Amino acid sequence: MTTDILIVDDEADIRDLISDILKDAKYSVRTAVDSDSAFKAIAERVPSVLVLDIWLQGSELDGLGILEMVRKKYPHMPVIMISGHGNIETAVAAIKTGAYDFIEKPFKEDRLLLLVARALEHARLKHENLELKTRGKLETTLNGSSQAIQQIRQALEKIAPTASRVLVTGAPGTGKEMLARLIHAKSPRANGSFVVMNVTGLTPDRAEAELFGIEDSNPNGGAEKLGLFERAHNGTLFIDEVADMPLELQGKVLRALQDQGFTRMRGNRRVEVDVRVIAGSNRDLESAITAGHFREDLYYRLNVVPIRMPALRDRREDIPDLCRYFLRRASEMAGLQVRELSEEALAMLQAYHWPGNVRQLRNMMEWLLIMTSDSREPISADELPPEILSSNPVLARPETNADIMSMALRDARELFEKQYLAAQIDRFGGNISKTSHFVGMERSALHRKLKMLGITAAEEKVAG
Image (cartoon, rainbow, N blue to C red; front, side, top):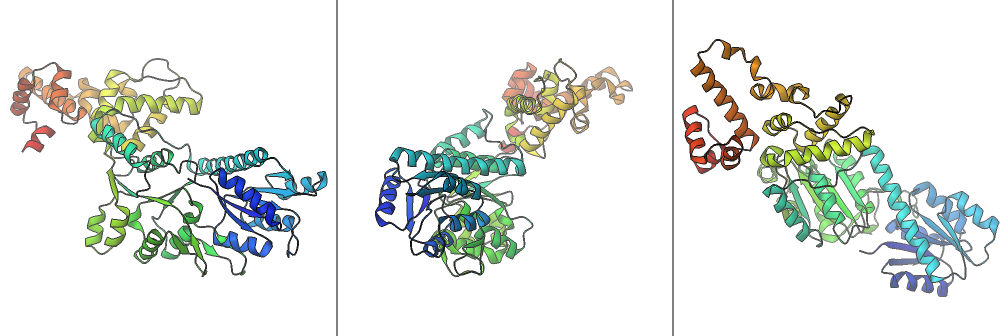
């Protein structure tokens, strides 16, 4: 995937030389000869890197003047200054004004390519650092060995190298954004930006400004606010909770997807972009279409490749691996010793229904590590949070079940068996084979026992 570079130089032979060098390195290149044409090019699309000559004949502003304006409006865009009349004072002035680096003419091809590569990497790291500060540590690992996760991994390997749009659905906390990041990381666009937008709670005007940006009233002013579509040029835009997008904005998004271009708010200049769009939703978009809240034509534009992220309760066999992974990661972040979970604690965690899915599990592992950090022993069941303990009292503290103390032995044993087997069935997601193997009963004997106790497993519900 190419990166957009703008060259501003008044000498045609220098422009052509730099352009040829960068094109040979598979960069996308545009050129300008003076400040007016430079600002016009930036207004059409903000480049990834600006290569700017200091001395520009016949230009209203010289390179330092352009640099000063660019740094005010686009502080994260790296600028490489070039000059055939360079001296120490000029280089220092350029760096102080905000240039990434300075190179003298004539320059070696390798030197130019090295500076461009470093400038792009510098911009990428600044963007990632900003995102890390505002969003916390990003999760980009698809953990687990369940059949559902294996199928998603297989789909990921096929989807990522293509340019196809993807619609990722699933309940909150299942990892929709994480999957979108993985698709981007494994795609030819991996060196481009991964930009996230959550439209939930945004007014139509605010959402449009976020997506498409706002045009400066100055004829050569470019973007007053850079939109996410523009920031994601040559990269990936993830629109999270797309079902919440205002209906009046959906038509504009559809046209942008069809044309790979748009017009900023308050503007009349067309901005062309190359963006892969991945959409996420925890709602049923087909129901939203029926209710008149979502455009059917936009749905089919987004739903080229559908992927559904499973709820954690539908992949319970992954919970032990996920727990170990999140405990290890939390220990690295907090500088604490890694803790293990006891078998009893793992059993309770597997039996829990996890309304918050993987996100809830991750947060719980961080909480456990902090709250139990003064011990080197495995985390026991009675150290788990109250919501886990109250959800499965038989596994947590069977001795505290006061009802058993008032029963005859036969009734107490039947109650315990019912609670125990119901908990194990939940733990293994209703899988009779896995449950029978764990509890040490033949599959047929377990079926008879469950029927006698009035317990219906998920496999029986499906079969029915």
